Structures are given as structure tokens and as C-alpha cells.
Amino acid sequence: MRPDFASLALFIAIAETRSITKAAQASHLALAAASRRISQLEEQLGARLLYRTARGVELTPAGSALLAHARTLMEQVAHMRADLSDYVKGGKGVVRVQANTSALAQFVPEDLASFARAFPAVRVSLEERRSSEIVQSVLSGATDVGIVVEGAPVHGLQCFAYRGDRLVVVLPRRYPLRGKRVAFARLLDHDFVGLESDTALSRLLTEHALAEQKSLRLRVQVKSFDVVARMIQARLGIGVLPETAARPFARALGLRLVPLSDPWAERRMLLCVRDYQQLPAIARQLVDHLLPK
Image (cartoon, rainbow, N blue to C red; front, side, top):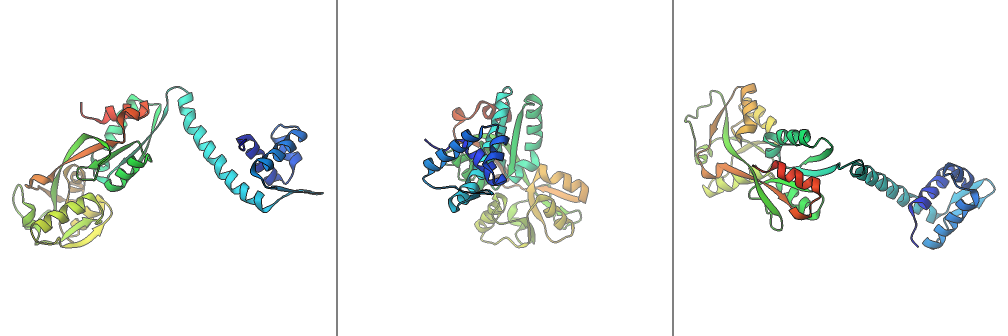
């Protein structure tokens, strides 16, 4: 037989009280039954766990090692029961979602808000990640649903078209660059403010700069869209951001948005899962809700 949760919980109580008698009382067990459980636990593990003394009990080295593992295991069991209790109470549950920065800044908040109104009993655990990290999380089963920018290596996943966005040049209001639309190649003699180099947007801009046989003149690199906008307001350079995400910053900071004329500036976002048919019902409901009707 393997150790059971009740015996491990009893062992933890004994370790904390240093008394089999007190732990038995707290566990609503007779003293003889508690002693028998500990003896069985020692037989199952093949190691002595307790020293019996006149003042109570002390942990052996094996007992100290077991205590650390038992506490970790019981914490995991508590988390498991908390998650599963949602289902027991009537069709509830948790859906794990990871999304990239562009999706979170533009579409995901409103989409999840409408899902929450339609399915108020379902909780969504949402994390922001890079597209490449999201793909690995979906493949490994660490998340149920991933939202990435097209171009991420999604081999092995089922992917559906989610949303599209358009990239725009973000400029200070009186910056000397004119036109209702502008080609990316015209920007490459200017200083840029950009995101960190491991983001999908940074890789995209670097790739197309190299296609023009130029390098991107990155003067500042930061972590978020709002900081990019503030650096542009301070005239440290120009930037390229998704239009929907940039529009609130443009109004607040007095910036100008000019659409890129390049075809690749129209991007698609993908909703990815490992296997739609194998998803829990509530995760399928979320996927169905997010996909364009």
C-alpha cells in the first residue's frame, strides 16, 4: 500500500505537536488507531519516522525529510480540492489563458468581460507572456488557451484566426515626417523607441529593417507600450505600435499616429489550443466565445 492523505496529515500534526496523543485528538482518532497508522506509514516507507521519548516524540532524519514532502503534497491537494470544488458546486471551473502584450492591450479585456457576463461561474486565470513562451505553455499543457501573433512557431497546435491589428508609426505632434501613410523604409534613418528585443513586434521590425539592408536605430528599449509612448513624447525617437493600443496614449500625450503602408503591417492574431476536442467543456466555451462569429 502507498501512504494515504489521512496518514500524512496525521504525521504532520504529530510533527507539529510533538505528541501522538494531541495529534490523535485533533484528528478525532483513538490513540491506538493513530499509533497504528504511523506504524503502517513506517512499514510502507521502509524507514523509522519518529523517536518515542518520555516527553513525546521527535522526528528522525527520515521523518524530517518526509515532513517537507508531506507539507508540499498536502498544499497541492488543498489547491486541487479548491479548483475541483468549482465543478462540484455546479458547472464551474477555471480556464487558463495566456496572451501576448498586443492582444492584452487591444482585445482581450473586453472579450473576457463579455465572457464573464455570459458565464459568471467560470474563472479565467490570465497571464501575459511572449508569443514563443505561450506556444510552449500550450504544448506542455501548462495553459489551456494561448493568443499569439501570427509568425510564432505554432507547429503541433490547433490555431484559429482571432483578431487582426494594424501597425502605425507613433510620432511627437510636430515631428517632421508628413503623409497620411508611410513606408517603413522611410523611417530607418530615424531614431527608434522600441520594446525589448525578444518580443514579436521587435523581431518583426528588425527583420524588415534587415530586408532593407539597414539596421534599426534603437535608442531606447523598454518593456511596455505605455512607456514607449512616454519616451516618444519626450522626443527620444519614434516608434511602431498596434493602432488600437496606441490610440489612448496618442490622445493623452499629444502624439500623432501614421499608418504604415507596408502589407506586413496588417497582422493576424491566432487563438491556439493543443486539441480543441480534448479541452474541458468550459475551455471550449471560452474558445467558441472568443472566435469571430
